[in-house]
Amino acid sequence: MTPARTTRRLRGQTALISGASRGIGLAIARALAGEGCNLILTSRDEKALKKIGRELSRKDVRVLTHTCDVRDPYSVDDLFRSVRREFRRLDILINNAGVAHANLTVYKLPYPVWKDVFATNLDGTFLITQAALALIPRGGTIVNNLSIAATRVFAGSAAYNASKHGALGFTNTLREELRPRGIRVIGLFPGATDTDIWKTLWPEAPRRKMMSSVTVARAVVNAVVLPANATVETLEILPSSGAL
Image (tube, rainbow, N blue to C red; front, top):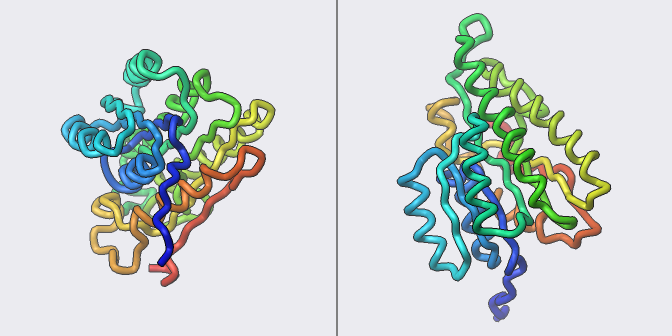
């Protein structure tokens, strides 16, 4: 029988996760808590955040929940005022907040929908990252959840594809800028994962073929706990069944 692992590899560290109330963000929060990591959890869903905060506080880690609209610079500023009051530093940043849109060709895609997708997926990643950088020390890690839509395109998802391609350009630039500071930047490229985003993107999608959020979270944690002198720059995780 293999003995249970008792080492909590991230004890004493602190992570901030955006979009933490469900899906991949929630799975990563649970996985990090299992490793002893203190958590700052944010999303727009206050009720869900409070419930998750109570759950994860029982894992013997500190948990701060704070609603935040990543599209709004004032909301991001308010979040980081609370972060600075409660924590001295931020070891891990998980930019996970993201939205999709209904399957629409470019010809039919409303401009307000385009703007809203970019505001969350690209502007929000920038605003959270910029605010967090003053708190991240050498040895810290930033993970940007980009989706495989950052390197591929899917007809009917122009705003989602374009926002993720833009977020990839931001991620690659950030990585080069932060190398001298010893801060790692990981681009996360999950393929089809069974989350609520499919209700918007493709309601009839075959969920049984998809990965679970837990699978993605496990891969993220394994990348984060690498020694400081090593990194996974791009982390692509795909369902073994192939294309949906």
